[in-house]
Amino acid sequence: MGDRIVYYLTHYSLVVGIFQIASGLLLLENDEYWGSDVAAFKIEPSKLPPRGHFLSFRALMKETNSRFDMFPRKEIWYSYLQGHSAKRITANDFRIIERSLDQQKYLVPQKEFVPADTDWHRKLASLKDMRLEVSLRSL
Image 1 (tube, rainbow, N blue to C red):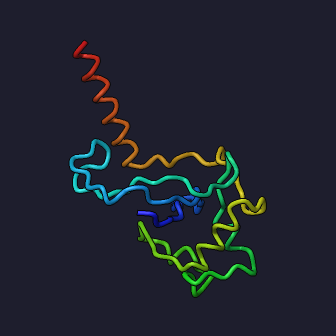
Image 2: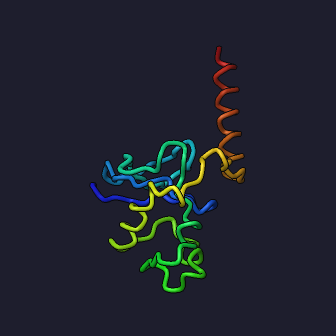
């Protein structure tokens, strides 16, 4: 507990903010949304972009003087993140992201981004519909 994480939205290359781990590892069995054998942590916001905004990681990477330890070849930075649900970063990389969270040139309005309609989202919606239908039948 106490570690800090950068919450990154992979599909859009956006940073939601920096959060602190607020619990030990939680093992979820038969979770209604994720299924079985899921490990998670509770998180709490530590530092966020201004209300209604995300940090555009693409915009940050276009900045000529930003050097990240985790991207040896800056021109293909995105390939270093593919296939990872979590990635350890250096203190230097963490500080760059943290300092950038309130810099206007890297911010984008949240309203410009609509959650992706994926198979997982459709399955989740159908599960919610089924639960609602079952609960209405029991009335």
